Length: 151
Image (cartoon, rainbow, N blue to C red):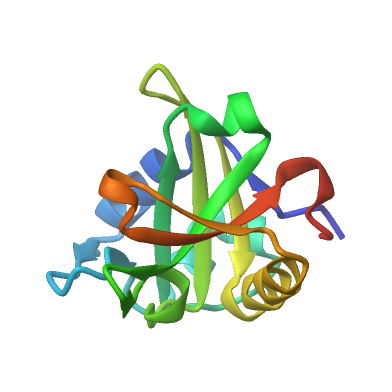
């Protein structure tokens, strides 16, 4: 079976194009969860379905890393913001997509089923891999070393 952890750079554009060709609309939540909602079957029925080997999901959460990931080797997974659950702790998505960018250009997408990412984050948290960050240090984050993520 092919390795589906890393999604091609054009994944987001391909998703939007495939949804458009199918007459589907991709909608975005307005509840601060930033999930992208995909109507049933769009992924399985289109070219991008090949990436997921028949896996079916209806929502995904997309988070973008702008530049720190290259300097630190980490990706940051938010679980609390301003004392309230957020990110991985509050999402209703069943798939997490982490976008790695350089100078505004997407280099790669990392896609992980939500339950798998939660397990990875729990282990990292238990091992002390968490800190505050973001604007005014209001975010509480689990740090995952890209080289150490146990896929």
